Length: 286
Ligand code: NAP
Image (cartoon, rainbow, N blue to C red; front, side, top):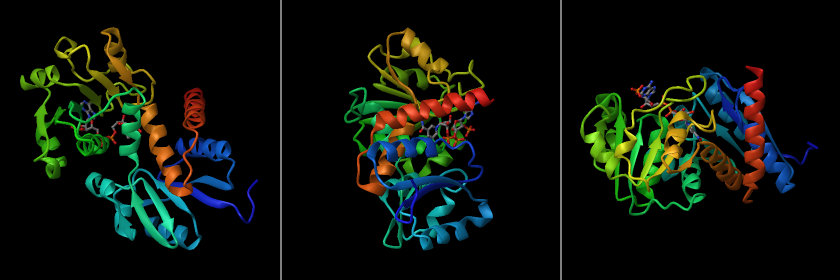
């Protein structure tokens, strides 16, 4: 029950009605048996500063930040950590005695999806498909964990190089239409799709991977979470690859945010069950 002692958490975004975070975080709160509440707050882009100041004044313990505020919020915070700085986006804010600290928990979420399958990035070669916002978190996570080489392959290499210019010393950026793409696939230990190809409702789409080039022992990760098994992952499974879907990353980023706000490691299984229930409910609505 919410009372005067309840500690407030939430998520800001625009639109926000379809956010899955309230379901996941409420499940974590219930499983931990703590007196917190978590709500979704619609915040128009022109109201961001007022909303952030308001949440600080209202003593919210923290909040998640989603589209379209992840970059714009940075200038309104007192401090951001290295993950948020390297990714250029904040998805979690912690209110520490009135000081707002910006974090990015997508890295922790992505890495959870690897560790759950017993995969270590250290010393491994990775190929990332796509060069958007999520690719930055995946790329930084792999570099931070000591991957021995990372190649980013995208449909538009000029745009990809531009988007990842601050990583240009650390990664190779190529067009997936170029013949060197096959070479990159041949040496990959980890292959990650960060494009929306194959996401609901475009279930027949998939990135242009020639599976004959991918070593059987390569680990294949799709960060898409609707559907749970994309065409890309189904093709990988058919060829005997170990795979991971995006639900693990989504749960992992939420679990890390919960830990930062409460100091408690949450029940990730409870969060994942709530996430899958919420996804089923929203699929039935459509
Ligand atoms: P984004 O910033 O728009 O980037 C998308 C990337 O995919 C860009 O490189 C884009 O290339 C490429 N792309 C888009 N449509 C394409 C197409 N039809 N063919 C080839 N390439 C295409 O999006 P994002 O925020 O990175 O999100 C990407 C995906 O990750 C989404 O499916 C999202 O749901 C998922 N995601 C999952 C999690 C999780 O926790 N599991 C977290 C974040 C995102 P151009 O620049 O050429 O358009």
